[in-house]
Length: 328
Ligand code: GTR
Image (cartoon, rainbow, N blue to C red):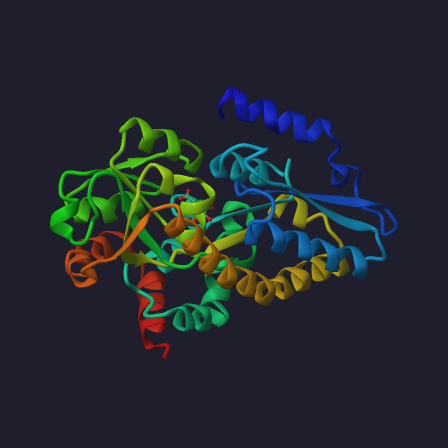
């Protein structure tokens, strides 16, 4: 653990981890949740909404405080804190869990989902449930999936319309071996780094391109420094809401139910906000001069077989992929 993470963890503990005193039924409980996105972003609003439901249903006893805008560090930092039980929850991209619980790689596989409806059907089914559950062994209770749209490439200099355009480019990816492999499959050089470093890296030319959805491209101001957004839509990696297994195990059953139900119920709210935000972000970036171009998706899809071969490694994962492909 880095020194800064250690400092954040001890701060979180010092700030009062009410759970550690052992929750009696009447005891107040504040659940702290981290998000790298700023106030007003759909993921932040959804967890705040969940907090309102929890407060109401617990008669004001349980509250949720969201630390937005990376206040508690990068996604990797907050995942560590959740694992240790210093933090109750973190809303992260499921890509941040790829190297921690490998089954979460499945919904990030390139071109696996054919539409948003397909994605929703899968995440809302026993398949989504199974993947959420898969993180328990690693110390995380998966409470819910949130939307994150499709990820596409955006670049400086020239658009990435096809695999040929991407050749040799330095492209930032999330810190996941699968994300690295997708970029290598198209003949580009992958540079994994936290999202907080992308703007400066694009600006200074440390990287030529990155990939994300419209809302992150917009809220991170990446469109100011990488004005070509090419609709490769190569993956639909969803967001995941994690709860600390350490804290969960200490909670009475009735409180777990309040929390789990509220998380589920925040999902339709989040999806509505997400759809609105995608449109709004697209309008903002276009107005600012970003060029949104169509991409030859087939050229990207054609080179992804090695990624499946390398990352779909267990019978469970093979079965999940088959079941997902069979959902219509
Ligand atoms: C966003 C996601 C973030 C973060 C980011 C990234 O779409 O919402 O949680 O993972 O991508 O690329 O780092």
